[in-house]
Amino acid sequence: MTVLLGVVYAVFAVSALMTVWRIIVGPSILDRAVASDVLLTLIMCVLGAEMAINHHTRTLPLLLIVAAVGVFGSISIARFVARRDGVTR
Amino acid sequence: MNEVREIAVLVLILIGALLCLTAAIGLLRFRDVPTRLHAATKPQVLGLLLICVAIALALESWAVTAFLVPIMLIQLATAPLSAHMVGRQAYRNGTIDERSLVVDELADDKRTPPAAGG
Image 1: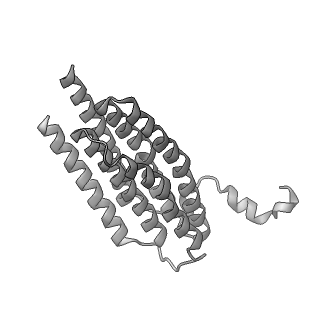
Image 2 (image 1 turned 120 degrees about the vertical axis):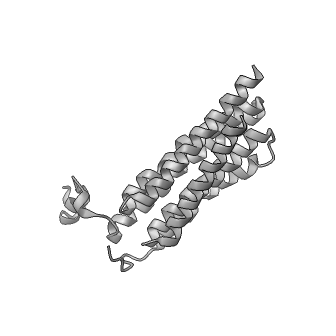
Image 3 (image 1 turned 135 degrees about the vertical axis):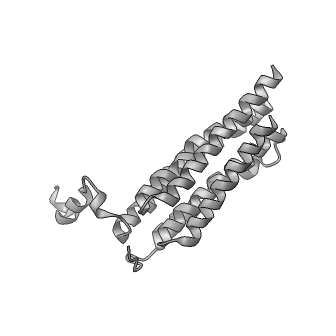
């Protein structure tokens, strides 16, 4: 039981660190938009997992609001990014 | 019975966490925006669905389950929206590895004007 909990924590932590690394490294702004979208999904998953593990419902409205509003971040980035942002591949 | 349920909840959460890990590995390993987008959309639907099932199983109340249904429906509706916008902008932006494409139907669309019906 405790081992399984530790594995869950470790997997969440490692994936969050890798996602943050992609946000830092880049190379284009759309990569960062995709990575921040993943980070937001990861936060939702962590909030939900914490609720299921500790048996409470306090962060349930937060989950609903993040699910509803989180999409606007990457949509507005994709909408207003320049046609060519000078990426060298 | 209670013990079995706790184990099932933890296993569901673990599978959701592993989907998040695959998304992070995909973000690090893949080359361009559309392939990274492909990896990124896995936990957005299936991972969150598994976590929501885990919450419903752990709290075993119909009120919580009824609250989880709109969360999942909103996520199902908005995840393809943002993926579509980012993918289209990646194509126009040139942040796409064009040699890796098998079929490029948007390039055909560029040659034929939309009013030509082609």
